[in-house]
Image 1: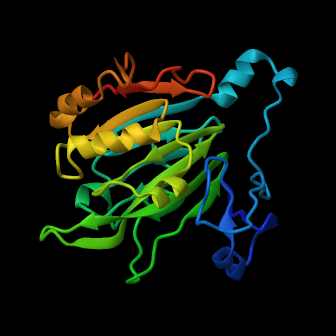
Image 2 (image 1 turned 60 degrees about the horizontal axis):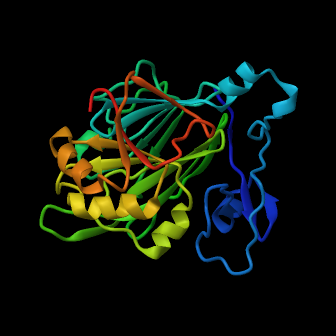
Image 3 (image 1 turned 30 degrees about the horizontal axis):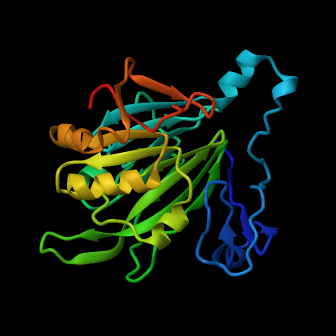
Length: 283
């Protein structure tokens, strides 16, 4: 089992362990520009009992270095992507158990807009189950978790019910910080993001975007979110029937490519120089 560790920082001081400290402190993120509008806060590098690996380019063969930098991403189905870290941690997004990766994930994230985005009976072999909502009315789901070489956090957004009303903080944008990459999964996003959301999210090198023509948001709204975040690599998901319209609205702003293999291998070194939408196999 991978060692789970929590690391928190408040005003530049690293704190770990106690529940009180976890509630009071703010998680460290290498991808955030500003978080929670904390006055006077100063971010430090992530520190944990078993910290994320430091890669020294001069000390290791180039092939070994490339292996330690490369993240593998596979589209499994609907809104489920399987992310495998250089250390072998497996993460499944919007996990419902319907679309299953090739192996049992170590970590799963979920959102509750529809049953295709969560399950109440996850496989017992999953180490960390991270719901994107809180069962306590008025509270936000808050995740700041380190599993192996992956740091996982979330930013909550609202979801729309069938009658048109909004449920506060019912969805989470999950952010995975792995091998220097900032990977974001928008979940079942139902509204455009505010400046506060963008500040909490910070930099995203890779963005997983639901495209469905209106079940989450219309293609025009979703394209504005994707354009504002300006990630290097955009991976669409959710409903293939709306893909062509989404691609058409972003043509000219982003290059458009189609994956030649089921597994997308990416690192900081291999990110496209121009923002690119990469359509995965199976989408």
